Amino acid sequence: MISTLEDLQAQVLEQRSLSTAHRHIADFVAQHLRDVSLMSATELAEVCQVSQSSVSRFCMGLGYAGFAEFVRAVQDLVREEWQAPDRTRYLRRVEPSADMDPLIAEETENLKQLQAIVTSPICDAMVQFVLRFPRLILAGSRASATVIPYAAYFLSKIRDNVEVATPDTPLWATLASHAQPDAAVLAFVFPRYSTVLLEWLDDVSRWATPMAAITDRPQSPARTWAHPMVVVPVARASLFDSYAAVMVFLNYLVRQAAAQTPHIEARLQALEHYETTHHVYRH
Image (cartoon, rainbow, N blue to C red; front, side, top):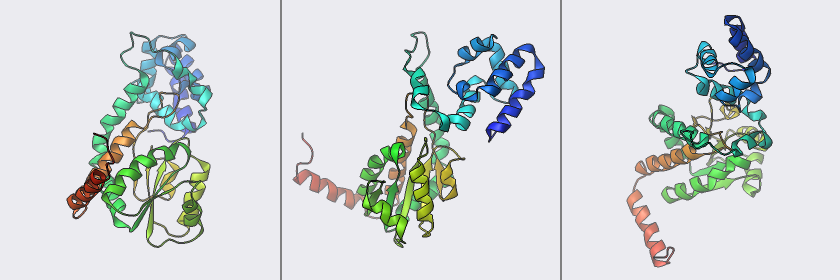
């Protein structure tokens, strides 16, 4: 598929000669890609004064299954330009006649993609990565850091020395300033890609620190440093990105890592005994 905005604009403009409707759509899309990335098929049809079927044919002419697949490709290319005010469109009430809320529909599709992700060799490589090194550092910034507490909590149940590095922790500067031979970094790199996180990953890479990443697309900036890099889609059809598929993937990752951890049952029994004797949970 298309990998740059320039390539997409060129392909869109090639459709101008096919019909009057295609010309109207192509002219608008080529000049308003950011707007189109946040529009529905109905809205695009209205602004171009064409039918929805014309919009569908236009998208299929570009090689997509329909408008939904086309707009997702556009979003992949322009979403770093989105700002929170652009997304207030998602605050509109979903009409009762709609089949599904856009966010739920997108997350449903994202979850369907997980089966292929978790059965891929790169997922196996990630399981080995989280188990291989004496210290595992979970790193992220801003929105990307919001999933770290979940991952850290459960990974700590199956292995020792799971640590967290975010810009407000001393470990952040330590890892960037000198070599940590026993440490490896698992970075969470999601849009909008934080400059401070990317600069930190570059600094850490200078010390030959092993790095892996969980990110949202193959073209993610994490690819410069991360091996392995697992791509898990995030949902964009809301005021802020949604991470349902990411959370399910993390749970799967913990489960698979636990399955390969020696004496895991005894470890979990010891944890359970401690929590029971210290009345950690109310009954």
